[in-house]
Image (cartoon, rainbow, N blue to C red; front, side, top):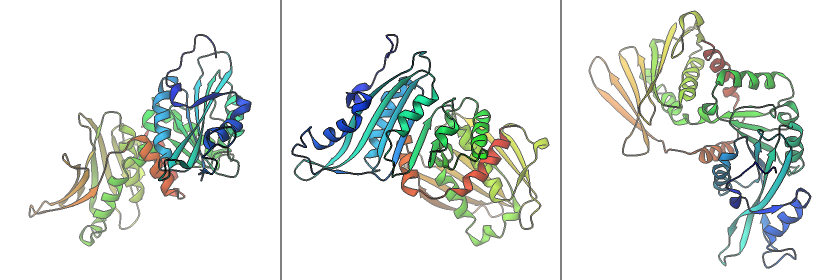
Length: 366
């Protein structure tokens, strides 16, 4: 590491080790000593490899705490990779530790391993060699990329990934980033399933909308859906676009580029039983929560978050009689660690997201 590089948060990474001693020191950390110690019967728990990658050294403390939170729920070998591409000289430093559960006697019983790296320079080969040489080779690789894609996001890396997690809300220019993702998927080298946290954050909203149209009276009025208005908090534009693209995809809508603009999207459908035209508008508001309203003929469906409890309220208002009905879904606020844990627990093929991402990419071009 060069003298100009400073790094805060290394005390959360465990024991510093040389690269060649990683495996030996991991065994010692888990067992309690080089001779096995009194905890030599500890079980290593690992269902997958989970790598968290970031090129923002100032986020090291946050990333270390996030990994620790995930391993409380998910059994995995974790690899935390912090890269400083601003440094011209390539170098690597490493730390090891274990996140352990204790038995009733206070001894370690089940442990998940963590290896942390701080890399400097811009060599993608260094990242690939470091990551792949320290995977549990029999287990799938879940790779969480935090931030913008860089040159390190190349085929030698993504061809080895089984499940890929990112957050488009963190991208300054989402359109360009989605192009890079699309190119990777079209290359034939990328076989991963992917998850965008911007999409995951609105799981409850999508469930609430789907529940509304499970009601026979509204299911029969799908063709009368006129559109949706979305009000989103600052920094959550991509989630709003995802919700728009999801609704359009469910209604077989195709974006009318000539009639659309940023924040105002028009979709057309020629499929019988679906609305001919759907208009979706999105607006940033000074509020911490999402809200949405869907116009269905004479009825209005409103989705709002309860101010006192962690619930999402769905209210259906009959425009003719003024009567209304309500439904409530649990909607706890989740941080990134909880969202990733949710993804890991659910697994699945996630096939629908790839189709929705195509629509999102098109919406970003208007």
